[in-house]
Amino acid sequence: MREMCGEHIITADTLENIDFNRIITLNESAAYLWEKVSDIRFDAETLAGLLAAKYDISPGKALEDSTELCRKWKEAGLTE
Image (cartoon, rainbow, N blue to C red; front, top):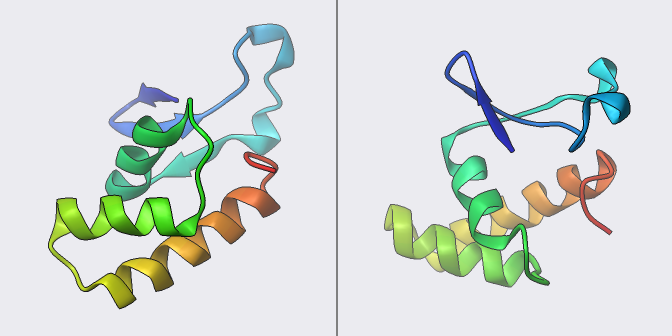
């Protein structure tokens, strides 16, 4: 993840691998989660716990949001 012009984006590690059609922009909460789990195995429940603790939201809402985020990350090819 990199910060560019005030935006959090995910790109390839090297310039040779960057596909500018596949740059992913993250909002503040998604960037927070990406930083927390980028080097560990995680699932929607892991993300939900982090969301609930940081943003003081209900566990149910956190799980709903994190499940959707996991789906989007998988669809974008960011996770398995």
